[in-house]
Image (cartoon, rainbow, N blue to C red; front, top):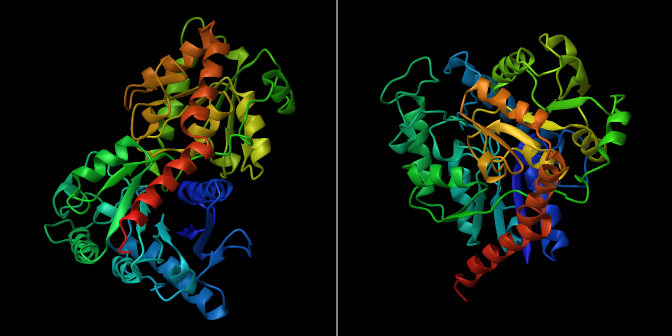
Length: 423
């Protein structure tokens, strides 16, 4: 079975990472799986690319920059991502796509595939699967919806736009998607039940078949290490209670919830029974230390971590991973932490409850309650059953998100779609 995956970038962001992981899992499961990307920042043998020569690369860069910066003319100075989907490339004539048995679409924004380019893929007469890593496919432009329900109808009156009206840019984008989707026969994969329910409520995609299959993770890489030794690697005393978070204050993504993390930590530090000297905060990400606020605990900044084995050891050094996301499909950091047997404290939102089971392998705090987020951390700080909670964290990933489990679910879906094809 030949599967070709389409993604804008190679490994960039959560969607790119999830795409590469699935590709690896499928190849390990016996399929012939291949990832084709719109643009590679560096030459790579991991993926193929539609932008090979100088002209194609220049056009791709133009598309990417145009999509990222033209939106500023229409959108408010907001931290919520919005896509115009004006620029793209028709890739339907690509030989690898013609030779594929299955075409699997992932994240295709930033000038890769416009709605009409997606419709062109249907002319290849192949089963098309589309994994939704965020909400953009079924909205008039936003990637994160929060409480907005305009996508239930035909968008318009978009709260993210400077000139919001019944027939604003979000409505016009919705109309273009509606026209293109009428010519696109695809099966949707939702990595979480939250995403599946969102799709069913959308006017653009609510009538489409949806299968819930989670993203996967390399459980042989993201695995538990001896906690005391992992702490020693980070030069942290073994008796310290280590908090970890992968979120930096971001100028672009307010849905990461950093302000709630800061508020929760300040709340925690003020509580009786909390020894501030026995707690250390560890933060990884790609922001400079200068961007960081003052935290109430001693803080270690790890910066960006490119080596997954080292990252797994960092997760293992933590006693709790705090994920303050306000809306997330199936965040990789949560899955990585649990796979390393580190419990997670997070808001009960998005696809996080698919992974975090309250008071079993972590703590689900009430939405947008920094106080309850602090309570979850405090629960793990005092809980005498930490070893059992850590074991359950690892077991839950092995049971439901391992490469073999997720690959088999995808292969079964692919085969069912191929069986429906005209003989």
